[in-house]
View: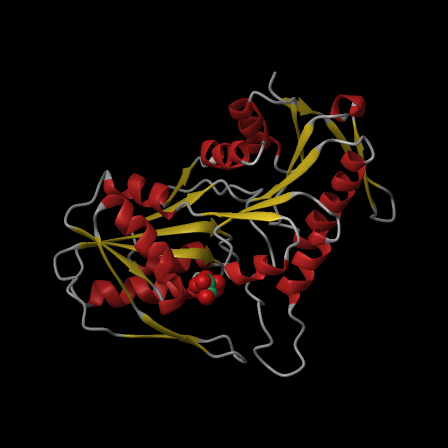
Length: 303
Ligand code: R5P
């Protein structure tokens, strides 16, 4: 007999969590979520006794409201643990703070390390994340970890309307994502040369002698935050004669005027996934549902 699986979700990520639960043929447990008048968070799992002896999967994501989401996730883990599941798997598609993965300037906190250590202290058995900015952060997690790459799925969607494509990473650090998608689809890939000023945040992308002339280009990155990186990269390759530029990013935060910036850059499409608890309806953005890939990863951790 197979083990019973139950899924519990963060309050702002219910749609994707239900899809994952359906794929896993798991019970989806309702959670009552509220805020006290002073702003504190309260969670209560309905019918918690179903958790006993099961494999419990907590699904939650950390954008928007990174800090509150972290606290809510910790509360959900506490509530789940009280009912003695045989195993707890935490799936956080977007793990916030992962860009601060080291002390870039003297005196900085290594926030990504703090988040991983907090999650590790809950003694969960496995942690599943999607395309974490700095995979090495997962090394200090005490249980099993899986970093699910999805650049191939985003590129697959883009390829439907591209010809003679090449995949580019906006900097050397992102080359792994570009390579992953390129190898899955048998495409060429390369990277651009980016520099970010750690104090002003200003980005410069140096031209590189790439053969993009008359080719369709897909720029693959993990996060679009202010849109500066992607907009500059798109402008640069269009300036070098690319015919059409698409952007594929696992986590499209798109803060402030990021969308307008990317539109102005000439990029024709932003391909992203449902890793966040926010969806922006705009003709420039296309969302790819990754719940079945997440379910496959979780499934592989069940036994
Ligand atoms: C940084 O190295 C990341 O991989 C992304 O390129 C970066 O976070 C994007 O930020 P923004 O959209 O603000 O340029």
